[in-house]
Amino acid sequence: MFNTEIIVKSLPMLLQASVWTVVYSLTSVAIGFCIGTLMCAAGLSSSRLGRGVAAFYVSFFRGVPLLVQLLISYYCLPLIGLNVPSSVAAVGTLALCTGAYIAEILRGGFLGIPPGLIEAARMVGLSRAQILTRIEVPMAVRFTLPALVNETTMMVKASSLISVVGVLELTRLAQNIATSTFQPLEIYLTAGAIYFVINAVISSAGTLVEGRFKAETAR
Amino acid sequence: MAEEKTPNSRPIIDVRGVWKRFGSAEVLKGIDLQIKKSEVTCIIGPSGSGKSTLLRCIAFLEEYSEGEIYIEGELLGFSLENGGRRRVSDAEVDRVRRNVGFVFQQFNLWPHMSALENVAMPLKLSRGMAREEAARRARAMLEKVGLGHRAQAYPSQLSGGQQQRVGIARALAMEPHIMLFDEPTSALDPELVGEVLQVMRDLASEGMTMAVVTHEMGFAAQVADTVMFIDHGIIAASGSPNEVFRENANPRLRQFLQNYFERNVFWQGSEGAAAP
Ligand SMILES: Nc1ncnc2c1ncn2[C@@H]1O[C@H](COP(=O)(O)OP(=O)(O)OP(=O)(O)O)[C@@H](O)[C@H]1O
Ligand SMILES: [Mg+2]
Image (cartoon, rainbow over all chains, first blue to last red; front, side, top):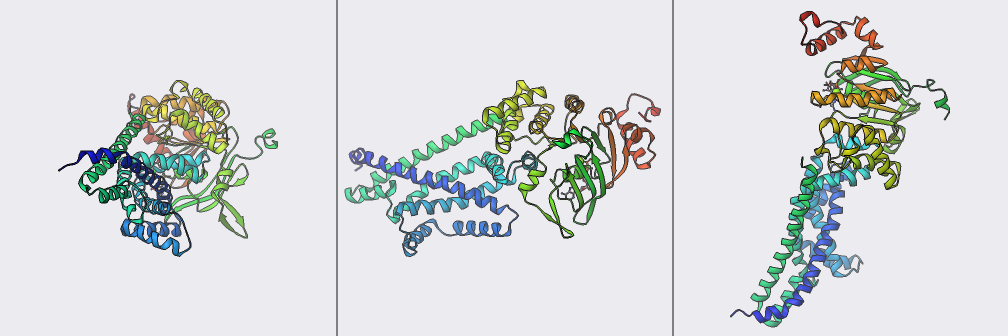
C-alpha cells in the first residue's frame, strides 16, 4: 500500500538534492546561452570559417543523444588528462548541448531584427560586440522568449540524465533512496512532483518577463 | 582647430567620381559633389534614381564600387596603396565617420529602449560618457526637439513624428559635423511632417551642415543652399533653389517637377500645375 511516511521522511533530502538540479540546469542554460549566442552570431556572420564551425557544432550536439555525450565526456576527459570533477564535466556537456538548441532558437530572433536597427547602431559608433550585446541579443530574446523558456524547462528535465555519470542531483538521490527503502513508487512520484514545481516556477517567471516586454510595445 | 578658423577652406564631404554597382546594375554613375560647412544640400529625384544609395555611400552603409569619398579630408572606408584600394577595418570606418549623423526614413529607434535610452546609450558606449552625464545630454537633446516630456516613453508609444524627432536627437547628441537625412518625413502621416521639418529648419538656421534627400520641394526651396537633381545615377542638375526650380531647362528635371506639382497642387485649375 501507499506509504506516505516514507515521503515525509525523505522529502528534506529530496528537496536538498533538487537544489543541485536547479543549480546544474540553470548554470548550464546560462553558459549555453552565451555559447548559443556566439554560435548563432558566427553562423550568421560573413566568415566562412565561422559559419562552418557553427554548423558543425549545432549538428553534432543536436544529432548525438545527450546521454551519449555525457558518457563520452565522462570517459574521455580523464583520457586527455583533464581531471575535472564529474559535476563540472556534466554541466559543461549540458551547456554545450543546450547551446546548440539555443543557437537555433536565437537564429530566428536574429533574422527578425530589421537591418535598419543595426545600421542605426553603426552610425552612432557602436562596435560589433556592443551591437551584439545591446541590440541583437535583447531583441532576439524578446522575439524568442517562449522558446527559450521551453528550452530551460527541457534542461531541468534533461539534467536527470547526469545521474548516470555519478553526479548527485534529484534523480540520483531518488534512485538511492528507492533502492534502500524498497519504496520506489512513492519516491519517484515525489521526485516527479518536485520537477513539476520547478518547471512551473520557471514558466511563471517566463510569463512575468514576457509581460514586462509587452509593456514596452503596448501603445 | 585650424580648419575652424577657415571654415570654407575644405569641404566636409567631398565625393569624387563615385560609382556604385549592385551586381551588374549601375546605380551611381560617377557622382561628384562637395558639401561645405553650414551648407544645406537637398537631393531630389525620381524613385530609384539612386538618392538613398548616394547618402548611404557617404555614410559607408554601402561600400562604393569606385571613386573616392572624403570626410573632412579623410578617405572613407578605404586606404589607397600602390594604385589599388583596400578596405580598412570597421573601427577605422567608425573613426572617419564619427562626425557624420544619419537620420533614417524608418526612424530605426531601438524598440526595447525608452526615448532617453535611445539617445543616451550611444553616448555611454561609443563616447565613453558617464551615466549621469549621458542622461543629462540626452535629456537636453530631447528637449531641443520638443520631446523632453516624453523621455521615458518607448518608441511604440510615440507618434511617427515624435519617433523621428528622437531619431534626430540621437544623431545630434553625438555632436556631428554633418547630418544626413534620407527622406526623414516620407514615412509620416501628412499632419506630422511639419513638426519634423521645423526641427530641421531650426538646425539649418543654427548652422548645421546637412544633406537631405527629400520629396518636400517647399522645404528644399526655402532651406537649401544647393539643390541637386539626381536621375539614373548621375547629378543631372545642381544649383541654388532658384536655378534648379526655375531656370534649369533639363527636360527630365522639368518633367519631374511637373509631376510633383500636379500631385501636390489640387486646388487650382489645370494652369496651376506650373512653376512654383
Ligand atoms: N541592396 C541593393 N541591392 C540591389 N539593388 C539595390 C540595392 N539597393 C538599391 N538598389 C537599387 O538601386 C536603385 C536605386 O535605389 P535607391 O534606393 O538609391 O533609390 P532612391 O532614389 O532612394 O529611390 P526612392 O525615392 O524610392 O527612395 C534602385 O533601382 C534599387 O532597386
Ligand atoms: Mg530612397
